[in-house]
Image (cartoon, rainbow, N blue to C red; front, side, top):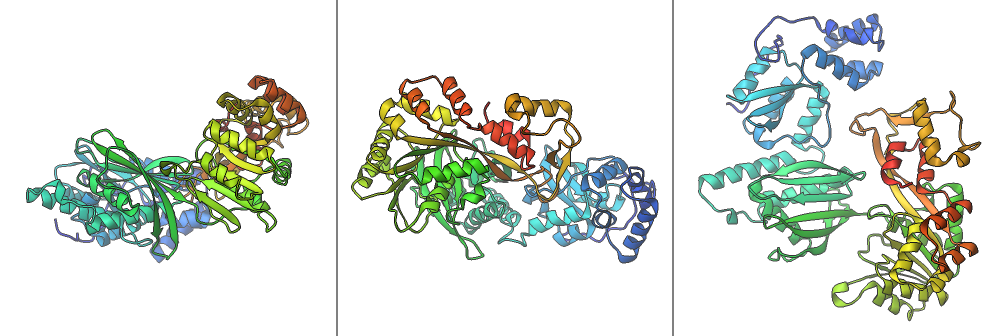
Length: 599
């Protein structure tokens, strides 16, 4: 097939590709919008006339001028053309092999693009699945293959093609992958071995760079490179706002090369594939900005290696006001940070914001009068005034060894990256009892469970109870997208579920009754949030301050349930309760709170 295909005519035909007369005029296509109340008949007539006169896309005009939601337009198109509607999503990646014999300019002019292979067929996104000329060209492009059509907006098809061209950042991913596919085919034709494919091939270097740049642009926290055996393609997945999705796939012949390239960037041993390795990459974007990535490799089935890259924050510490504490929780956190000695712990799973929170607390007390030492693995956030030490367990510089050194270095405040074992916990208790303020993180589910965990480690309950000041437990929930957030009146069952989860006694008199004034919020879904309704994350907190009565409970090794009841009677709000408060403030939804908080 020629590189460029001639311009198509504007006649209509059914999705099967067989020519037929047009079913209705364009005005008839959009008539359901009038019946559904999105606009009046005269407004539709004016819009159609203007679109014809100015050569504009009718759907785009209706969305921009009359604020008609894209899902409503899509439903009309799907019904008219009798095939599914597909909206643009950032994570959509066009398989490069499908574009090998097609001109991007032709596709842009005629508003269709092949998306992916499905068994022996091809899925095609097209703005007019009834145009016989376009359907004929599709069959010419993919002879003998079954074609399934998805109807889409011209603007969305343009965005897909723009992503293919990669105009926003660096080299286009699909062009690079196209090179890889072409080179792989050439290798097969010449009966070359896979060993000839090295991590220094220009396409591999640019592909690795582009994956990192694209992950940063999309706000990803992690990149997962997952090779498979049996000649399956290597998956590249991004984690954005706590959720993973497949970003792209790399030809199987290059699974070793892409992993080796990342290992070279992280100064790791590329010959060692049998055991895990850790390293760091300092990566410079095309904008000149430098970012840092933490790299971990793990041997997996089929003699492969998985690589996980975590994008580290390079913006310095954040302020306490950015963590959306309740007024009472923030007041108590600031009080704990002003104590002369004791232990303050931040609890939660990996990726819940513990280290970021501790650095924000340290920033609030980071003055010339205080000497602050930190032991971290790795050092993710740096700030002036802190003396930060990177621990190296392989050479014996563990958290415990570093803590002992700190006690000889005249500290006022000590921060330990993680309290992993009894030895570290004992030294932290010793440091707090000798007049130092100690901060640390710990992997536990709740504030109360943290106390029980440390006692189970073997810590002395009397010294521990004297040293402990408080525990701040954290989670991150998905935040409702600010661009498409809308309020709604909940059903009676939704309301009752919130009341039961918060606690009937605590709810009464504090939060609204079930009437017209009770409103909740949700994301309608828009292009900004990829029609998920969520964008970004919001923290929820649970702060337990250790009182004199609680110290006696700890010394007596009281059970978790009794500790929790005491903490709540003394004013502690649980993670679930703080999350429900954020729900009522319109920051997140109860579904998201329930997914991360425990009752």
